[in-house]
Amino acid sequence: MKQPAYDKSLGRWRTWHDDEAPLRLGVSSCLLGEEVRYDGGHCRNRFVVDTLGRWFEWVPVCPEMELGMGTPRPTIRLQEDGAVVRLVAPQTGEDFTRRMTAFSKKRIRQLAKSDLDGYILKKGSPSCGTERIPVYGPKGVLRRNGVGLFADALSNQWPALPIEHEGRLNDAGLRENFIERVFCRNRWRTLKRRGLTRGRLVAFHTAHKFLLQAHNEAGYRRLGKLVASAGTVSDRELFASYEDGLQKVMKTRATKKKHVNVLHHALGFLKRDLDSRDKREILTSIGDYGAGLLPLIVPLTLLRYNIRKHDIGYLQGQLYFDPHPKELMLRNHV
Image 1 (cartoon, rainbow, N blue to C red):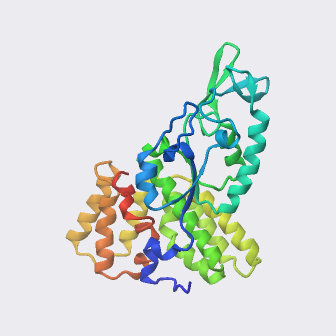
Image 2 (spheres, rainbow, N blue to C red):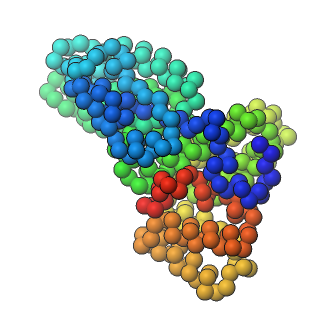
Image 3 (cartoon, helix red, strand yellow):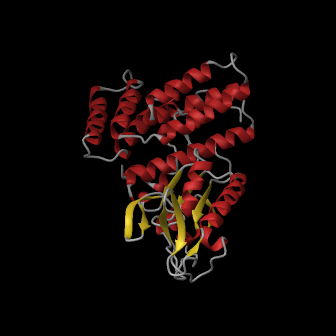
């Protein structure tokens, strides 16, 4: 993986990925169409299966089935018992809390060996739901801020892993942010597998500059200081600190305002090459995007065209312009 810092090919997402190590996501089995629901049915998600399935390898998990609860099975729910939230089947009174907790810890340790790049969970599930799960008391619902036991263990044991539930993927911004994190995580894993060196870290950081700025400018600057500290700390400490910081920066959601700042920054590299009409057209598209009149793909397309036309090598190396497959059309809707 010999990579000059400003190689024109660096901006293409495929350059940083390896077909021998496909992008791999954990997923709730029911979302793939497996009939593992409590009623013997499934919740096949078309976006997950038909769209993401073209690009990702799945590692399906159904905690309830793998726990041996079978299907069909009595419904389960979260139930408050003093300071403890339990997972119980109200029809039978059976308490699955201890078994599910032990299973989750063991299963997540196994999943950690699968080199996952992210995880998509089933919303609303008392085992897999990530938010707003009803917690019951003796007289009914006490609150609606519970988290499924497996989902809670997953986020606590693997805090750097990108995790979403399928309901939030209906939001274009959340969807794009999640997939960006997944692809970035895979690029970092690929870099580590091929052999991290300080030179390769510099190339990685350089190619991700605009992408990181769109998520967290302050975080990007902190990562830059880490890269600049090479030689004053051990490689092991440097790479571990950079990986931790990278995941934190990418976890911060990119916003319209941040994108506008990055787009203007990119335009600055073209100021000597554009005539007044072309510059005005790009500025108008950026303004219209910022006002919510155009999707992000429009100013990006105009900039990409001019970057290629005027052969701006540094910008051609920026993954911001091509961080994931265009076929996903993620930036057509944000």
